[in-house]
Image 1 (cartoon, rainbow, N blue to C red):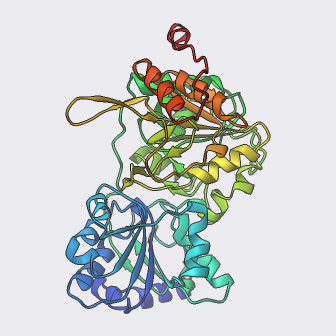
Image 2 (image 1 turned 45 degrees about the horizontal axis):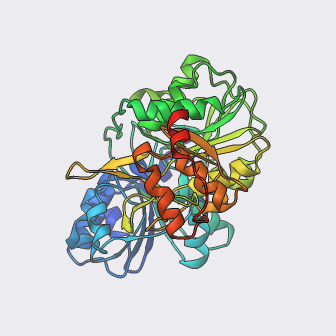
Image 3 (image 1 turned 135 degrees about the vertical axis):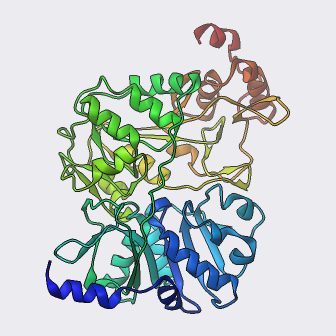
Length: 456
């Protein structure tokens, strides 16, 4: 290893307390998602905030799974805590207004944070430095890496704090910082978060079967994390030459690779490579991406740029939503108006799929939910009462365990009939009567519920 880079490393290596002390009042700081957030550095910074030593700071936090101390009321209330994607740690504080949910497309975070809000600090988990002086921040390149490069391109200052973890993989792509670009670094070796996989249930499997029917060999796939994407992945293992361009590199992609279904050979944009901006899954996935020339991690304004997404022919975007209505408009980040998660890259990938030659975007949900009293309710409403994430005119395919319908270009009466056909049978008559009562469709419209029951 070059002695110059080693000397720089030793010069910039700080204790946790020393590095935390370099954060100043008024700093605007970006925290990446999940494993990307430096665990021990943020314990030290949170301690300073709780002690009243750090004032007037603003944070942009993505899915905080690694710095729960920041979400304590006595800490979060001392700063302006913006939640880009609400985690279970953050949800209670977000629903009380102490953490401020920020409705924003993933693709837009770097631009708005640099051009509109002047962020000047990023903190990231990094792999050990290589012999050329480079660190990989691939566990969560996403918005923080993109913000840094965007700031420097515009001649704006940006301080870079890295927490070097020997367990973090070194991944190819554009997610690297050179030691000469780093403000300070700390060392902390902790086991990477590996979310447990949830076995798909019957509803997941039914939804996945409808989606899988629509996906041709050679398609490029975007999947999220959870039981539904896992179910889709399992039903795609018999396909041929699938590709990967996604927001999150998750375990389902490793399954597809191991089965031989995913080769990336047919991709029309960056062929032979799996492309993502976040790596989140099990230990086998982390080992798979480490120094693998077939995997690249890039910043979010590259990965989730709809124009880049659309360069992949036959692009298939598969995402879960929380609720939809008879027009197709969908909620993905809230339950009613209560904050629950975040918009993430859903809109970016829906738009990119529509622009792709042969592309398709699927929004998937269960038809019903059961409340805490055991009563069943429809997840398809006459009109949603919440924060709309996907506009009705952007929805292509809407999927439940009762079917898959195509809504793009449909009028309202067509939409009502199609959406009702994939609602739970027990709620179809109610949805039709509500559509007539609200004059969404003509009161004399003939919507044959019985025929729908027979077809399902």
